[in-house]
Amino acid sequence: MSAEAGQTDTARALVTEIRAKRLQHFLKGRREHLSVSQEVVAERLEISARAYGNWERGKVKEWTDQKLYALAQALEMSEFQTVRLFWIAVDRAPQPDLRAMSRHSLCDDPATEAFLDDYRGMMDALSLPTFLIDHRWDIKMANKAFHALFRDVRAHPTAMPSGNFLRFGLFHPDAPTVLSNHQSWQLAMLAELASSLERHDQDSELQNIRRDVYLRRELRDAYLKEMPDWVLGSGADLVHHDYAVRELRHPDPLVGLQGCRIVEETPRPLQAVGLSRITLVFVDRKLGTREPARSESAFAA
Image (tube, rainbow, N blue to C red; front, side, top):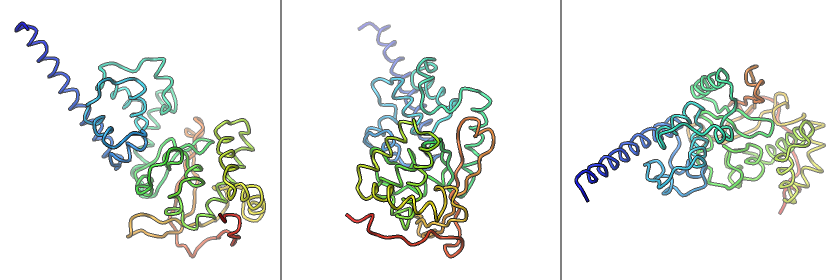
């Protein structure tokens, strides 16, 4: 090997090392801003914690656009942050055709994207768990308090709280550890599912959630038998049951068991992109209206 070739290889290795360090600083900083562990990000990516550790250190043989978009989604990056991720990792902007496929991007309008970035900062400053959803209850944005509430939830392939809130409440085995008096939450979520299907009866994902409900006998019986009667006496759905106080248990023992009122408060710019903001407000468990007692039989094995 000539001296010139050796110098070229050394320069390339130095550039690779610098890029890896910049990527590590960027990803670690974003993850710490969200107050989540490497294990949590790995669960969102559906890879091992060790594999994500290599991702964060830049030890990836080839960064594909799909990997980078998945990483941006797992770390809840804005459009600007996603572009910056591409420049650091592969020294270019996202390809226009693939960029349009990003599931994370909520809107192509720069002004709306800027508003959403500012809105994310405002949400993170709040001490109460709050999140943005679409009509399917897919979580599009959540604050630090939301992630803290569900920090001890184990990995699940389809029902993580940061994915779809209805799926989490209905199907995740850890849901009862956070959503106390879980059957009350489930009935309300089944009512929300029915209400959403009335408005979006052709939506394939809502239909898939209903299909998965039907595959579980106890949920199917509740959906077909208990939920309609519950709606007549208690309200239309999860959000619009006026004054309802449910219970949730925060993993922080200093917070512990709390009453919870679900509040929807959606400004016009969010409505324009099809999003709603949900806040879980902690209240005295003895206050407010509680759902009527219900039979345990529908959820028997």
